View 1 (tube, rainbow, N blue to C red):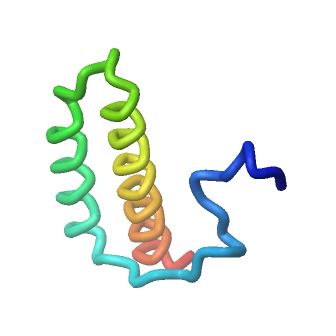
View 2 (view 1 turned 90 degrees about the vertical axis):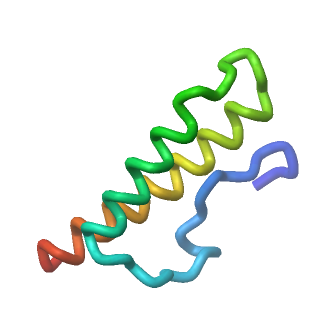
Length: 71
C-alpha cells in the first residue's frame, strides 16, 4: 500500500473492540446522525469528520446487531 492511500478501516491492523449493546449503539448512531446533519457540505474538513464519525458508529451498530443475532 502506498503513502498516497490509507484506508479508513483496516481490519487486520485494528483490533476488535468492545461491542456495545444494541440499544446503546442505536442511540449513539442516532446522536451522530443528528449532530452531523448540519455539517457544511462545502467544508472538506467537516465532511471528512462527518464521514469518519458516521463510519465508526455504523461499524459499531452492525457489530451490535451481529452480536445480538449471534453471528
